Length: 407
Image (cartoon, rainbow, N blue to C red; front, side, top):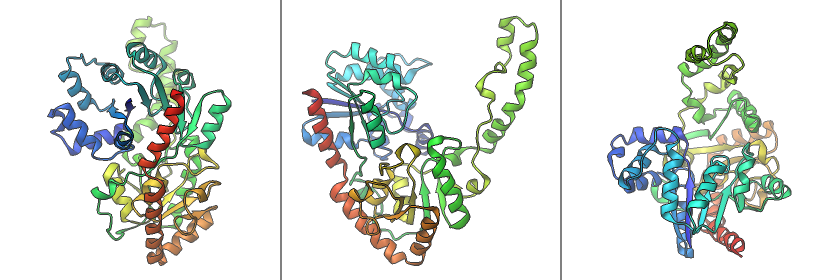
């Protein structure tokens, strides 16, 4: 069964990756692809690796890595357009791969016309399956999917209620990570948080509030893409709303439409002038450069304890990737208590849980004073994750779902 997973990586990660490997864009496509996947960002090739022993001819595409895709287009005689190159090149890659199952790993990324075009150009295709890890504003595209998978039970329930065939599938840990990091290193860092912290985003509101209070009461170090916001970018965000009166004045002038369009200011009613929310200064002082891939796994391993808080879409359920990434490398995870957490890890033994800010602070301070106990919890967590929560086990469940869908 030919299985093709199509993904996008964070743009910030890709810029960082290619800065670390400045000569890599000169290499052939396959060498670039292998180097990129070997950094173990996101899901990397984890499902490809886990599905092949089950009889799948599984492959992976990262469609928004520009040097990688330029190399493929050049090697296959496919034009590389100036605009929309990611989806245009990906269309040719998918149709040439001739998959029977197409797995698109973010339903908010892939537009409906592109999926329909792929279906028309790929007669072998039997199933298009999508992944939804967070609420999406692109529900119209869901009509193109034969089924949707999600790690969040709340999303599964909502989509099923809306009539979409949807299945739950937990995130997982890839054991090969332990071969690529110093997995036995003693912690060199204290309390950390690694992850997204989006100012103004409804789903990140509780996480940001907790992190702000932790920044005031603990020694937490925050490694987040939010640290990539430069002073110049923050200044630009502050200046933009001040330009609205100028744009309004221009709009009132009797200028020909073509002349007005040449002025590099959008119309006054454009959302471009809306003031973008910013992180509080107390949080920015705790920020460190984001870490991804193997660097992220090593930092988690180096932490005495690491913090986790689910986004708003998963209010009742333990569901995010950090549960398995942190425990898989043996970090002591401090995570918010959820209804189903005890079915994944034993609270107090394999993970440390909190139900309030004060309880979180109390337990973080206890772990700082008792590093041996923190290390013991991390060891138990790693054993549990390697026993119950690997991509090999998730691939077996994915295989069951795909067999059910194929009838």
